[in-house]
Length: 256
Image (cartoon, rainbow, N blue to C red; front, side, top):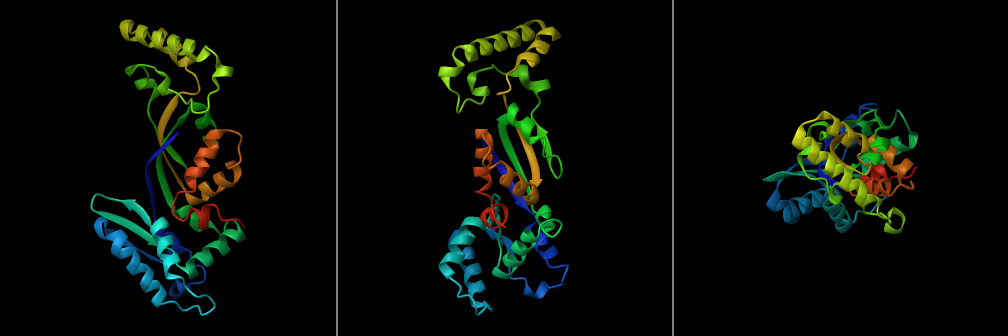
């Protein structure tokens, strides 16, 4: 599996909306903005953390500047552009409120539905069939098997084989690969739709397909807690990827 072109967004609006029910906007202590790429690491992240510590108002907790800076460096950069990056710093007060809403469950945690995610995922068809069960709050735009299947040679690299056991599979992968490639070539030579139809019919479910998949943090949280211990290794890979998203530990992985 591959995960590319990651984007997350709408953080500022999601956390602003989190304050609507009690109109507690004055208690918000998060910071969202843009910074030049070349000054983010050495200047902006440190400045944001220092400003936050200097304005700390909770006497029950002693802020750790180094820990806050490190957390911001690990989670804060949401999207790298050519010249600038978008950052989000979730403050102590806002995170406490967010996690209380998560503990309370739906619909109190609906702010998670407003944190958007877009990813290019390359995965086998058998995994996509299971992912398709998550329909609410998701959209996918895929590469076309209909139009592009016959355009390039069918090789072993076109399939998911990361955990394939050759002692079990034997020679079958080689035979089916050769058969599919033969059908592809006959279709190109003759343009006879019968060969294309047979290729579609017998194409293994380990065929890799890329989709641009969009969802939100509420969907990702649901997937993570239901699928992280799934016996299919691809679900484990996907959940491990989710752990790398901004503030995944605090929001997606957060245990009630």
